[in-house]
Amino acid sequence: MTVRSLRNGRTFHRFRIGEEEQTQQEAVQQIVVTPTTATAWVEFHPEVGCLSHGYLGNSCRGTFSIYAIGRAGSRTLATNLAAQPTPSLNGTDLTWTAGGQRSSTMLA
Picture 1 (cartoon, one colour):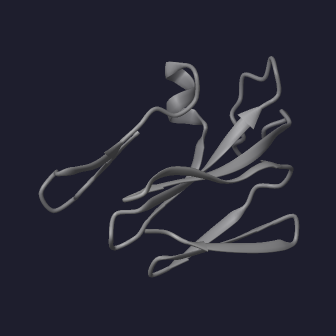
Picture 2 (cartoon, helix red, strand yellow):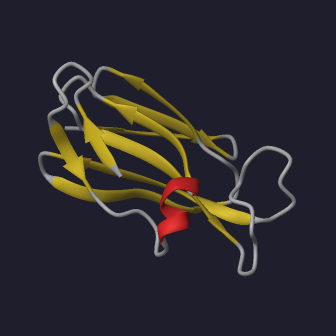
C-alpha cells in the first residue's frame, strides 16, 4: 500500500499488506490518515479457504486487525478482533470500537 499526497504526489509511506498480491488490495477495510501523514488501517484476515474478504454480505468468517505507520515506524494496535472495528480520527487521536469495547491511541 502506498500513502501519497493528493496535492503533489509525494510518497509518505509504502509497505506490503498481507501475504499475496490479491490479498493486499482486498484485505484493507478502512484507512485513516492524520494531518502529519501517520496512517492507520483495518485489515480483514479470512478463515482458511475463504475466497471473499470481509465485504458486506460475505459468508466467510475471519478476524480483524488494526495497524499503524508513522514517524516512529509501523505497529500493531489490535489483533484477532471478532467484530469489524469502527475507527474514527480526531487530529492525531485514533479511537475505535470493536465488540462494544472502545480503545484509543495517538498516531504520530
